[in-house]
Image 1 (cartoon, rainbow, N blue to C red):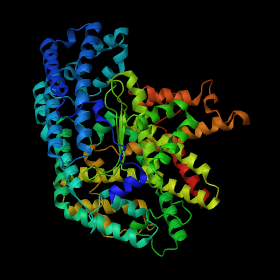
Image 2: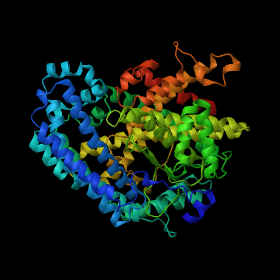
Image 3: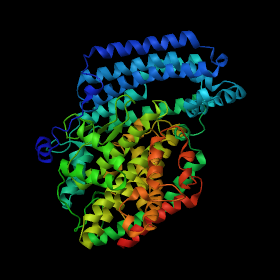
Image 4: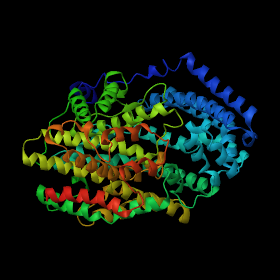
Length: 608
């Protein structure tokens, strides 16, 4: 079935070229790069361990450059191992190589961890003086960021021990999770997860019911294993947080995002207070669909007027690039590289992981994008989303490996903005008012998934991490009870949740791969709504004859589009607070978040 679909959509040959990294698992360059990483790390440790406090600014800059060079090689190896594995999770050789690279990374990290420890604990006055030296200007934010973790670093021996054990820690359990789902098939037709979930968008209710039954049966068949994986990762994080003196389960994620706990609390609180938007919408949808009860498997049912034509890969490419070009020719040019140069993996393939992602790779190569393209209109938005990430990663790479690492909350901004561009481009092509309304409803559902659903998942994570720490290991029933409670808070009486839905927490990989990550989606979406409103305001202030050239928009003496491109190109050289300052955004102001939510409310009102 997948082969025919790939042929119909013309995605069969849309396969990424990993030879831009290595020619294959037997490429001699792999062994050479592994050896270079190991020898480089040993040399750096031998020369500089216990001597960081004695370094001048030029020598410190030289050391950081050496460490960055090692990190680039290791990043190249890790990227290849991960991408090679992710499209063939059943392949034992690919899995073994991924584990080998993780063990190499552990060895290298064990040798180089001294730098973070010593620099993080360097006397404040000494560090401040060094950071004021122009020689270190390129690495200023990177070095400043390391010092954020000073209170959470352990002794050298303890850090080395953790590095030694890392390959058999949480990453190994997430690999098991991926392997379980890579081997899992659903229903009598033994379909993939992607194919079954896509049926939830069918206009035929019986198809949706069968998809929900098939998905649930598949999940229940592996629930004993999945529950064990979840409990192990919860416990691993609990122990790590305790050792590192993090005050809460989400504190380490907030620190990584360079956000204060207060900022995240304001975001979460603002969204949960507007669950009424979700409830209003689904009550409206039930009425429009003519249903007595809207069940969980009905949530994604298309409205009758929604265009349901299949979108081929070439048409998808044209849609995305046209939308990007209308906003920024530079953005479109970079996105075209992904289509033209073998940077995307698109077909449905047995053993390929589900979902989609963009991987930044290393500055000397380029990012890669993975999607599971089934040809529906949502997949076009997914391609735009991941290419938003890809463009961001491509631009940020110019800052170097250390400086290109963008906090997750800002990374999601680029992807969500790209989605919004494509939405408005597609909406403009629809002539029927009914089709436009149905298409807007679909976008609302996408926004709900990004804002409200992600925050509800954040609340679920809060429940399970807190319960694991206070009550011990959780049963399948406990996970399901927490999931149901949180979902009922969001939906209230607007959606009736079946017993099947209770176990649907178990297939969401974010809970395992990056605990605490999910609020980043809501952050990005609400920030994008604010930025897009600013962009529209600039367009509306222009004379009619110039509205087709957004590059000429002016606000405060500077164009919006170049400012946006500068935001992406800045990568991780500034904190989120500093990066959004040119747009007049205050992330600690509840009114800012409420403004984004008000925009969603306005969209709903327009269809009501």
